[in-house]
Amino acid sequence: MASPGCSVSTEQESFGLSSRDNRVTGFSRYQEHRATRRAHTIELEPTMSQFSVIERELSNPRRRHDHTPRRRSLLHSITRRLHDPVDVETSAARGALARDVNRRVRTALLGQRYWSNRFVGRAEEEYQLFISQYRRCSVSRRLAVAAVLLGLSTVYDAVVNQRPASFVALRTAAPVALLVVGSLLCRLRATRRWWRLAAVVAACCAYGSVLSADAVEPDGAWEACDKDANSVWQLLWLIAAMACSALFFALDLPHVCACLALQLATYLAGSLALQARWWRRAGRGEWRLPSLVLGPPAGLQLGRDEDASSRMVVDCILSAGLALLLLLCAARMRDQHERQCFINSYVLHARVSKQHTRIGMLQRKHAELLALFSNPRVPDSSPLVLRPLHLGQELKFLMRALPHEHLAVEPAASIGDLAPAVLAHNPRIILFSGHSFMGSLAFELDDGRIDLPPAAAFISQLSREAAPRLQCVFLNGCHTAALGHKLVEEMPWLCVICWCSITEDAAARAFATGFYDAVGDFIFNEEQIRIELAYWLGLKRMYDQGFRLGDPATYLHPPGHPHHSAPVFRGCDGCCPPVHGNVVLLASFEKRGGRTEGQRAAQPERSAGRS
Image (cartoon, rainbow, N blue to C red; front, side):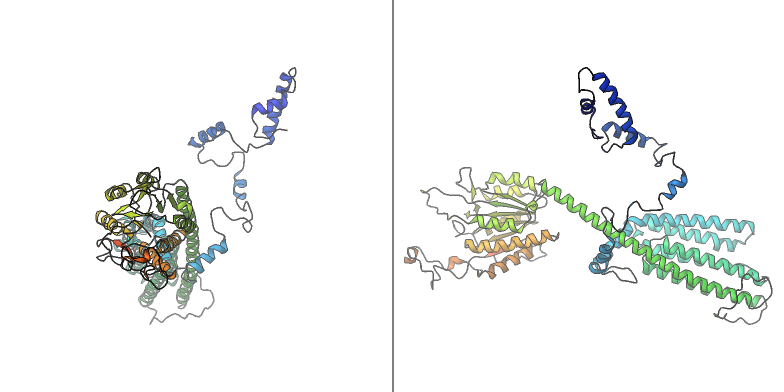
């Protein structure tokens, strides 16, 4: 039998083209088979026409939010969501970390505290910025909604019971105004950085105003049951205020603790003060602090027991403490869940960014390092002598040190290859490895002969418009300091690594391999490339391999010395100098904060390149 996703032509061949005489009969059998299969199979690969039908259905405003089939009952829609579609212990959500991995990341890597849930160092700042970005606007809206609900819930009581103006001002007008002001402070550009403080102050002051409204109400004629009812209402207002502060305002756990503690202290001070005032106005004698020992349930006492109201106050205080503990536990769980979501979103963002970077590198849109290798030759009749360089060894070390997607190489480079390579790869570092002569870099022509373009031709192709990401130019050739000075003078945002003397090929290769390893480590660790540190690590590699800084030209024999024809490599500094070259790091005074990096910059001398 044909697969469900096969085309009509294939099915017609299998059912209707077995015989030329039976073509009509076969096609009718095909239609029957097609109708039967539609009733019992599901198309796994929908066609473009099906996608257009789906798009048309989703664009219909009447069906946009109708995600369940009409023939299914509401009870079935509710009960089908009471169980997980898969086992959560064996199947992890796509794009999210496993629970134990998330916990290890929070505790081991980010140093999360057990009680406060806070991270250590930069991670906590990133989390606070994450919460501000995604929750600040919702907190502003919730403060506005709380103001509306508070106003609606208190206006009815003020109208029905004909409350005095001072009571309405404290119970309705002032709390609503405080919450609205807090909502605006969370929105305004000048104050939105302090939105947490605005939410805490608005919540605490609004509750204090609601509680203080009972102070202007005449309570001298109240019975014990009236005062008990008032105490219960004070407790309900406290629980509502603490619940909103702990769960709806996206506060951190220490901020929630401070806010709830302040509200509870306000409740204790206000309720006990109002209780003492009512006790004295009701003529019950000298008021005493109620005992915190639980007695029999008091309830709303209708009699005239003098201790009944006192027991109700104790019950309300204990209930407020219990509500405080429960809300703190709920706030801690909410804060912990938000931090778990932060870790998952951070990991997902890192994966997407890394994948985007990798795609860009694979498409060669960006490269961290652009390497130009040039090893030209001169005609035999030329008085200039160029020793061939071992650039293959340096290229091997470079390709081992840097990831291939971050590296672009131009072998046998010519001056014409520079501009297209810079535009194609937008590098951060440009390396030239080869000879130099009279302040010019020795590039290759198409036939392999030497080409000495002027320095201005090289500098003009490194402008900020052509290479906006360029930070460093590494000129790994003898006497390239003059060109490096010109680069820094004309482009002060660049730093240049160059040689201010002749250098031995092995010494230049040793420094370069240390520099490449440092740059590769920065790339592998996804850190910003620190050119100065990579320069010093190149010097360390050079020293570890036995090379020393200095100008070998000061030790070389003068022309006509007999050692030119018969060199002595042991005990003769002229044949084997104890120093091997001076490499410097040049940067602008403005860029480096008023100081120049590097050893020194010597004037260029006539040289045929690296020895």
